[in-house]
Image 1 (cartoon, rainbow, N blue to C red):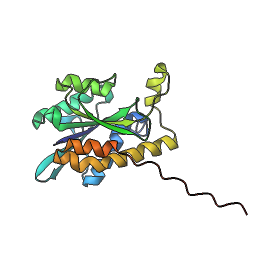
Image 2 (image 1 turned 45 degrees about the vertical axis):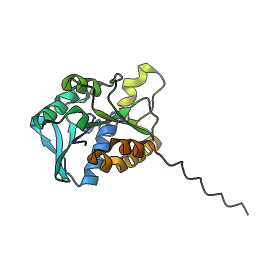
Image 3 (image 1 turned 180 degrees about the horizontal axis):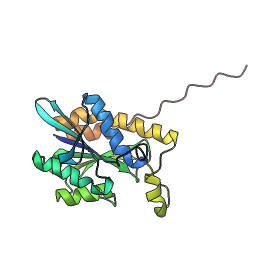
Length: 202
């Protein structure tokens, strides 16, 4: 089962609404779902919530180290509570997926994501779960740094929030350790509802 849910982002109001903070948005939504409150914990360099599900402690974490040092926070909490990499899920922004889509996978490379790169290094393993929240790509590699630190358009923000809401339907399966079911729930999206026919002009 997933014992530690991590959302990646940058701390402070300047970054709050930027694409790079999609992982924070996901953890905020999960905390709301679980009726958990994130509070500062200096020992783990982040905002932390602890809750209990079926008698098992579950942790929510938003590192406050800035993105490039996310692993410092994740590893501190995971080591203290003896949480294994495969019991960790990291929600993060994903350039290679369009807004409105989310993908779940375990392991693999960090694909140049600075938050994942540091988590790889600090945990000494890539074997944790990632919830990849699509933010789209600017189309030009040189624009990536600027893109992730900008706010999405209102339309894109709505798509991202809808995808977060959709993926949260899998949280019970994640907590139960049924990651096959969780993956199916995350990856199954209903086709958009057809728009009602416009009334004919009279």
